[in-house]
Image (cartoon, rainbow, N blue to C red; front, side, top):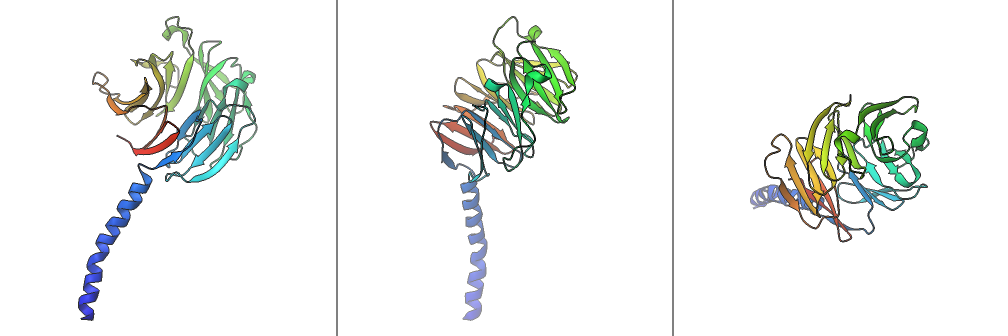
Length: 268
């Protein structure tokens, strides 16, 4: 009798393990967090999500559990670049400053005042894997590279030639795989190498946000999130979600913000 009971218990263990695994995955994906007034959103390769609400920044785990908070002294956080989870970039456009935080949202050094580096009207920034900063300067219509010593500013490329006289500035940028992607006037995605050579110029209508993961370009247009296969650009994009206000992509997860709710979904 005891042998039969032990056998039945052993038979149930795999089923119990599968149920527990399913519930864990279910809690990690498709989870929703209520949060209002989001002004910027980013995610890192470890699955953590960074949410800016004005001058406040909150860091959440892959299960959307609050890990840390930070309050910026320079007003609204325009954008967050968390592509390096150990050196998180905050761009405070109104005060022309970049702040660096560690993986616990503690300040790393002093804020960088971009006009000291020659960027008089910076509209977008992102980190560089070469231990520096990429800056889109609307005053000079230039893509600039700045190292962290603030002693070496390099003019990489003229942006005016690719904007067809459009006065709207660059509104977003990111470095991926050594190349720099820029949102030009909400109409085109330009791709430059680190030396300033134009590699691609993709036409994307009404683009308000973008990110690149591997060979896919994710972008927001008219409140809808799309995924475009870059090597097969002539193929139609895939609609990922509608009614999206802000978004962040990291590896296998997509964070979507809409109607006061932040949701984590599997990337597709």
